[in-house]
Amino acid sequence: MSVSRTDRKKPSLTHSDGVRPLLIEAAGLTLSGLLAEPPDGPPRATVVAVHGGGMRAGYFDGQVHPDLSLLTLGARLGFTVLALDRPGYGRSAEQVPAGLTLDEQAAVLPAALDAFAERHAVGRGFLLLAHSYGGKLALTTVARTPGLLALDASGVGHRMPADQPRLRRHLDWERNWGPLGLYPPGTFRAAEALVAPMPAREGAEVALWPEVFEDVAPRIDIPLRLTFAEHEAWWLHEESDIADMTSRLTKAPVVRVEHQPEAGHNISLGHAARCYHLRALAFFEECLQSAPQPTTRPTRTPGETP
View 1 (tube, rainbow, N blue to C red):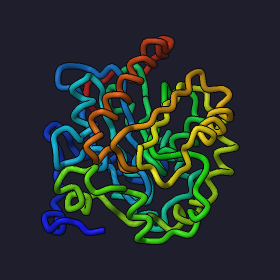
View 2 (spheres, rainbow, N blue to C red):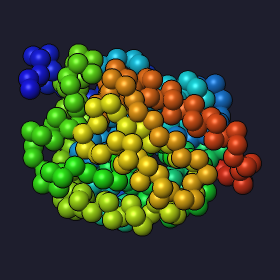
View 3 (tube, helix red, strand yellow):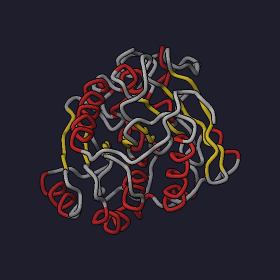
View 4 (cartoon, helix red, strand yellow):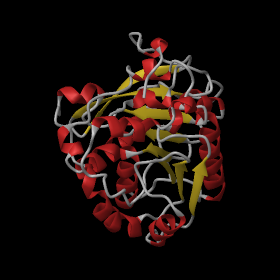
């Protein structure tokens, strides 16, 4: 599988207009990330985007086409969008070069949300949008953390193909991307600025997820939307697999499963990104309409410090 010459040039790290980097101190770590806020007033709610293994927060701010960025789209629709580098990625990689376990990350993420809410308006509260390993973290966090509003996760299931546990570099590339034509020209050059090594402690747990899911699934009690790409290859997602997965989500008031046509595992970097993001944000709109009125949260204007 080859990549065009334009995708072999040295990448440049850039952000979309209206997107800015930020740092958050949480649980003894300095987490880096990207932030986009509504230009014309306080947010309706805050979408927290959680990236997958081997990626960084910039996954949600694709640069090769204006339609790719979740951050700019969400901000235009009235949401604050916060994309965090998970522990072991970005700035925190200096502090925890081997990364953290899933359990440990599930303790850091809520602390980061609390720290963010102390300095920024968050609207009705937090909505999680997660991808791949980030979906594992989001599901685990939701099962343990009350008060979150809804979760949209792509690229995460509960059953892996039989050859999955032993990672192989070339096969992993195909699983992550699928057919090259699913992505705009320049994607793979730009992605070099987004990828990062998967921390060792995180990688060591890859094969454990089916058992972890068995534990967390019955405790998820917020609306949940799961999206599988048409060319998803990391997870089994035939009808019987989906039925088994959803049967374990006994407390979730809404469980919606969708398949995204013309998409590979890295949906948010492909031609289907805008369609997927719009569907996720529409799901969040439905959840906000049906959610009870929020308890008191910080109401500082965006960027205001205590």
